Image (tube, rainbow, N blue to C red):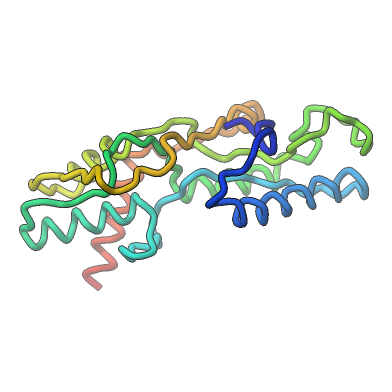
Length: 208
């Protein structure tokens, strides 16, 4: 999804309240910049993961949940790990420290005008639309591929059972970070390396 895709069609209903709250913040910053000459920059991150993540199996996101399930199955010699859905949906992930680095880069090196590609900040300028910046890797992976990657990193030797009677959710969620790339920033930590570092942190904290 590119930045200029925002508000070009209906919002997904089950996510609508959350989406509206975020969009209101983006539009507030955009309007303040245009009307009052402020220099706010809004960013839209993709799915994040890393040390200090939420590993609670009831409330965590898919990557830390899978990592914990695989680790506990390994420790307990559980022969099979159940994963909800078919494994076909695709998701994008960004290491949390890359997200932080991108934010610092934008704060120190870029201005609001860089997000619109023009110096014309008049409110009547119809070229100004959706001035937030996607922060992502621009690379997605299927849930099945993700699970197999985590299985290998954790060293779990059991079977993975994809329960396709459970919902898959949206099939593709992928950002287009080309605007950020054009401003000379790109992620540094690839997914497999990031998961490895995250697992090392998890083991250290668990053993403390």
